[in-house]
Length: 503
Image (cartoon, rainbow, N blue to C red; front, side, top):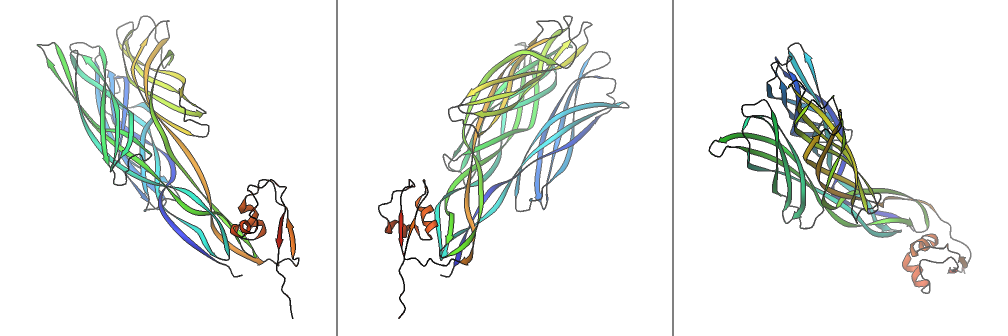
């Protein structure tokens, strides 16, 4: 029998390479070498990304907010910005692809250079590529028998947008805003008809100097937000995920002497990037063979991951913190600011283990009344119950730390505590195999016997049996209607062959 395979193609957008790239960004503060730095708060904003052949080019702007004590002890502040561009090499990158880039600051350092202070930070880019893909698979053909079945293929859609927020809150009298920091934690991400609906909270922390004093104080404000990001492909109930970053912050203060209060007015812009997943079942062969011939089969694997559930969680952590300096009972603690949390997740059956570090900067006055600061780090580990969690899954946790405080219960040590508000996303992965190509081999010489007996193996399916006999599953089932699959191994299948009689 002649063999002529036929093929079909399926086009979709798949997840491509996952890259991690780092760059060093520096900024100069002139005439600051005599000041004692108390805190440096970096914030990075992405300007754009482009995929070209062999690399991903991206750029952004890094803002440094700096607080210091002048030689006379006066607390001062400054803000500087530096633009940067960088590229990440990737052999598979092509102009037809798109890149999602998330930036974060890994480490900040300072050094003195003459009368200037050089601020430097390591900016890490997490890059995910979306790739137009094409699957070519065997669809049948003359002389070919295929074992067809559904294969799940995940199509990825991306969307982005921004939301503007305004918030006012009352405080004590504020003489000057020294610096501010923002943390974002999602509370809900769902797909609706034609859009991605994203909700969350922004923790705005403001470090300020009291009116007429040289003392610092910090204020926190949890700002809820909601954004509907247009996405034509969005359908209610689709698996989805989102990331949010703050791209712009403007703060202003006004005083009401009659009420003896100060009001802080905040304007923020948050950028939302979303990803939606649509699964389609494409009928492809998991196995194939040629009738009357040997053959070689080429198989390919489709691997895909998608979020299966997301939920919020909270935990209060506390204990003895690691400190980056010396402190004693003569010190007067004033404020905690620049708090944040780094969390990694490990998934087991029914549980997600969250491990990480809560970070903050504690401001205080030493025994001589001079302004000082010390970074604190509080490690933590706790379980998060999740009935849908199973070993082999992956979890992502985004979190904000709020209400962080520190006290000195023992000289030379700081006890820190704070609340973590978390958004947990659980991902499952799946691999599917299909036949992408078949090549016919030598013709198999038929047996001369008119009757032969096939002894199957235990667990053989109808397809296994048909492949061993070189017949279609329909032929095997029709000739042996009494067989029940999978087989036990004790059956005997009699094969009859017609003999041609020559005259």
